[in-house]
Image 1 (cartoon, each protein chain N blue to C red):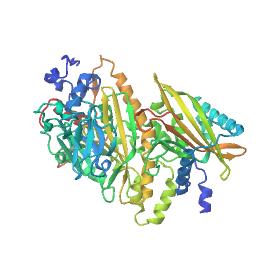
Image 2: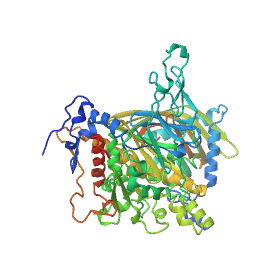
Image 3: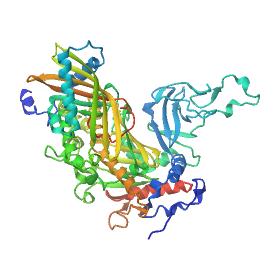
Image 4: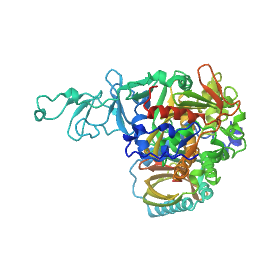
Length: 198
Length: 441
């Protein structure tokens, strides 16, 4: 078994790690993201704000490879259809991207052959109402925020409203994304061309 | 070559003497069928009304008095179960002043009370009562003022259809040669139990509803429209699912079957080589490797079958006018206006399998709506834009027509032909024509 983990540790190519405990973590993250939190201290709040602003800018500038670098090997980029996440074991999502599928998504966006992204979406997003919770036992940092993503593509301007749940894990003095959940206000309703990155 | 069949009558009602045959030729259809509101309005009455239209799946109505709000064409309707479990469909339109009486998508209700003036109706449509009845004369007859009914509702193995036509054949006959294909798809579930999940991809595009139906039986487009998906799938070397559309697919084993009554199917299964092959060729889902290891360890005798049903059914079954079976999804075409359409991809789980299989089915069913369908819909929208050229009147569907050696007819009258043959379009437009002309089946 240890040999296998060794062989398949590149999660951009293999997905041995998305198992029962992975889903159980998501359940727990969803619970924490639904709780009331105390107001965060200035330092973690500033750091979290900086992290989200940088992430937003990478997406809005189309720097998707750089964006991908923010994610850890056991990450999930999750755009649920049921707001807040629902039950992913028995529900489909707009995006339920482990590291491999997220790498695929970025690859797909960059093929230049995705007609739904010719021309590419231009986006610019606003993030506010940010709250931060540090969880000493796990070392994880939870961030909850509201967003408006404005998109312009092929002559059509749209805006998407919702809230993000980020779960960050410490790495090398910084943070990587364990979970990024984008909950659209109208996620279970009709959407045209939902191929932009949230 | 250019005849000019622009519709000249001013209303759809006057258009009844329009010679629709002018618009649907053997090898082409007129652009106005995609762009003219009057055509659309007439379709919403005749095509979505005078033949069997898919309404909902029985799993969405799990108990007595369950209901689902949906539409029959543009008509808001409520599909209901009565207290004994019998299926009904009523117009979601108060008999009094036309307000919708039900504003929830699903639920359980024995009756519906109109929020506007309080008229109350049984879930089978009958008027229970109107508030303060002394305000109506003595000849007020409640039996005259029930909710309008979709007069015929029937279910085929869980698939609920409705029609307003008394002349339409029995549902099973209408499905006809599509039935064995639907049976195959349903029977991939060990006990034939298919469950529509609550979360669905509701995708919208700015184009006519028929663009989605055209595409569903089109084996010509994948290697072009889905280039990004095919490119992505080869990121890690070996090519995956659908790559067989790439190299002259007409020489391969895939076929398209014209099933009659506007139905067709593309059978992709001959591209796969025995048990486990569908799974082996599926683009990788989150958790795939762990899942396969677990299934092979726990169910060594049955692993290939369980893995295959965790991936798609490999048939594209189109049931005219609005039901598309693709992968493991029940896809429904919902026209919104002449140039706007909703495609609802209902994800399904199945009974009689380990729960991990259904989780993997969810992950499988996220793949194509994310990386395949959006490119098709982008092309539908560009077709709609291209159709604005009034001087170019025709949309072609002549591929495969009169090509030697392509088409054979089997003993049931089903035409089998090369996968890029546009016979699917030619087939359903014959049915469209019949309905628009008001001809008997």
